Amino acid sequence: MMNEFAQKNIDKGGALEEALRQYFLGMGAFVIRGVPFKQGKEDITDIDLWVYTRANVHARHVSIVDIKNKKRAKAFERIVWVKGLQAAVGADDAVVATTSSVDAVAPFAKRLGVKLLSKGSLAPIQARYGNAIRLSNEDILERWRNVNIRGTETLKSRLLTSLAELSTGITFAALNIWVDDAAELFALSIDRERKPGELARAAYFFSALVAIAADYLGKGEVFSEPEVRRSFFKNGLLFGRPDPDASKKFTDFAEQLVTEYLDQSGASAARIRSGFERSLENLSINSLVEFFSKPAAGRELVDGAIALEAASFSPGLPQPSELSREARTIIGLILDYADLPRAHFLGAGKEADREARPRPIAEEGDKPVTMEFPFHKSPK
Image 1 (tube, rainbow, N blue to C red):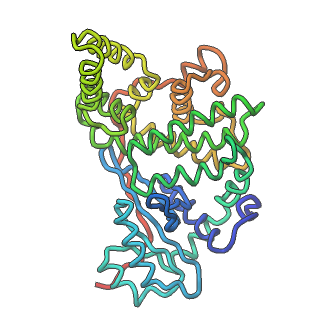
Image 2 (image 1 turned 180 degrees about the vertical axis):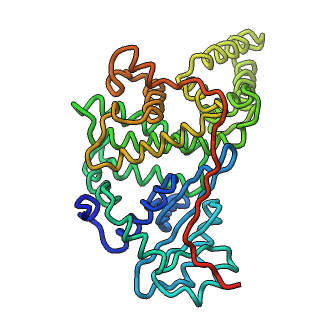
Image 3 (image 1 turned 120 degrees about the vertical axis):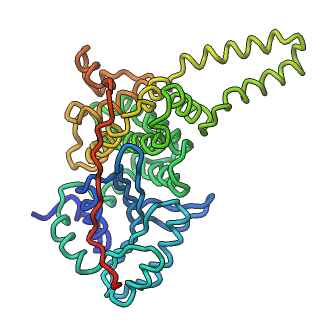
């Protein structure tokens, strides 16, 4: 059956990108299509597909995919181009999907470490995954181009600006932006929408980005002591970097200024330190920190992110009660961070509230995931 939703605003190239996105989603990856690549204020290009895979408890894999569905796809140029883009964004793999013949370019791609998806591989992928019942990127951007957030800023412009954070990889700066984006959009949805609509749809998507970023950033600390993991996420969410001495540097600087210019006795400086420490204990980020720092939270974060991404691209927007437990957990954490009522999105009553809160996690139960792509095998 033809996908009436995904075919509405899409050309031949976009249709192939959507089919490949669905292909990677089908293998358990988290996929973003059309990631703007920027340096400073300069718009350089787009990443056709950004593919994130959680292989096991401490291994993550990011691939970028360049897709050309043209008679003259200029495969040699695309291989060189995507290899440079891979280095720029810090991806683990670069893939070129091309409809041109790959026999001549396969040795060249192998030499540069670029994987190839050939015309012979693309045809069955498009036949199988080209009719998925979900909205395309084109549909989403069309829906969001006239939904204002504040002033002249729209959901479309916010999405493109926020996704550009991936130009330098996943960082705490990006995570903090996406947390605030999701919180703001949930607040606007509560204020403006009688039932979850396009603002809630966007909030779902940004919540998915939050979950993926938290999983990626926490991978290196999964075997650390609990307090080390808490400190890692608390400093990252507070100061934008996981510097264990960030809090001390901040208070030392504040104390030095107060002692030098206001009160040389040191009493005011001491009050500043104790007040700062008390404030840290009651921060709105604490629920995020506690959950992100659980050693086995990553699997739940990735599962929740995939469910939220699927919901945000669903033609009929699912109600929060219809989402998976992992997705509701992530929404609940962001609502708590924003000091918003859980009942609006997650239902009223103690049982609904309890179900959406993070459950205790005993041990990591990941099974290794292998991404088996039908790449063209270069001749030896």
